[in-house]
Length: 132
Image 1: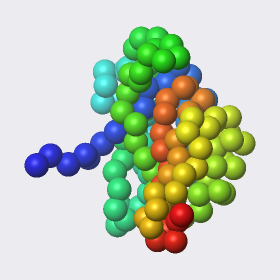
Image 2: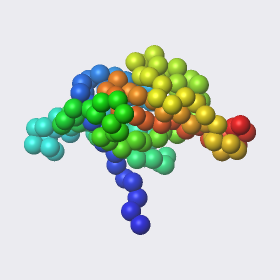
Image 3: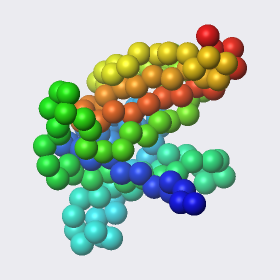
Image 4: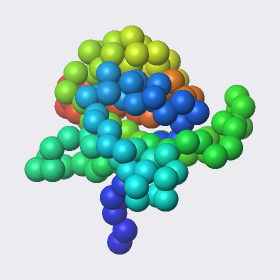
């Protein structure tokens, strides 16, 4: 069995993407260009090592984003959040957009999908056994 151990986000504007994910989730970034032969690549730390989760990378998008109705060209990752509504406010304040609005996963959680400033889709998930 293979586990997800890393994710990558492609972006048209790396600084704009870093600003967005820092503002919304508090992620930090480290320049890993020295490991990629000078190509831009930022390591993403998503939280303390003692907490469950994975870290990732941010790199320039190699080709144009598919147009509306053409699917995605990247993985969609979902982040666990403590307060769905507060997280959504940060997403929108940082320039993100709603892709699919908040919905109840009945008896399990609140789930929704958003577009970041680069047009990538991501999800947020707040566990809540009372979700209806």
